[in-house]
Image (cartoon, rainbow, N blue to C red; front, side, top):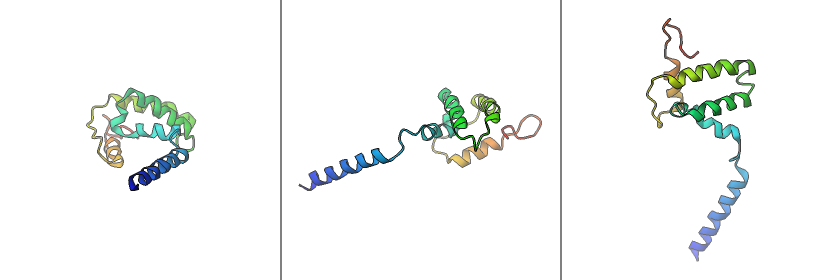
Length: 107
């Protein structure tokens, strides 16, 4: 009897969460592409372009093409990425990379 009640409770909670949480939100789906281990996937470029276009208050529309050029360079960049590495640590490493003239490679 307990197992039936517990199962019923879990089913009810799962249905409630599915109806309330934004699983279909495209911005949330595209956010998974900001992890450096995902940036190496070709689908990440499209997802990051979509993400940049969906948040014009963060990335101005006239800056999207420059961002895409930097992401293309990052796509071919040789760096190690650990899927378990913290996101801020991974990007700190990327932002610390220097170009040939000594300036930041990805400003």
